[in-house]
Image (cartoon, rainbow, N blue to C red; front, side):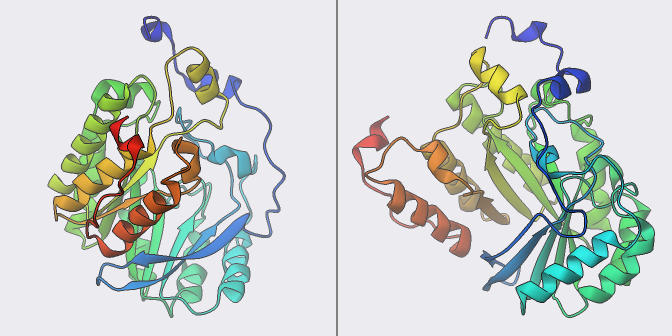
Length: 316
């Protein structure tokens, strides 16, 4: 990793490494699903996720591949609400909903203010609505939307890492002070905050990846975040493949994800989840993968540490 300092990880460089986007229909969300999640109440309940088709995020973070399923233009007023209505008809009866739009919900070029009232009406039967946003877009607009809602509003923010040098390399265009300000604003106004935390972003060894993920969990809870989600970093956007080929990035190991999840739950400071999407990408042991995946799933749901999975790969 000796030449890492010479890399200029700018918007232009990151975009230059991309492939092509997928074809999307601006009239429909590009995906939706229902999964079990441990709610703030402690109950394990169905939570729906609608992956809204929307314009590309204005920020170009080094590790992000969400741009693949976005449009190159802002959608007209009513397009996003039509997507939500369409998906909710398919989803049926749930209590909790995540509206993820491959960017920031409070970016007016993505979700126009004119759509807030109809969105609030569509979700009025729910208990919780979770949206995502870049920390720099947190402000009075959040309160405007919250005040229209019957469900409780939660906001998910990308913290990524508390390593300040690495945060700069991720091209996140925010500082830890920015994140703290946004999380404090939400907390002061009674809005629960979630934090996305990366496990082993580029330029870290495996042990450094674990260390900085754990320190990021510590930081998030210390400033009032209610829930942390640990996301193992992977390739998929061109820039990450380049860094992998240059020796600046390797996927984290499944044991590391399990370890950070155990650490976070053990703090008893709030909910901690591991992102188990494509979990097999991070495992090299077929003997214990299914048992290990189920153990982490149970940790996500119960926030209790089951007995460890015994396997020879534990000695890696």
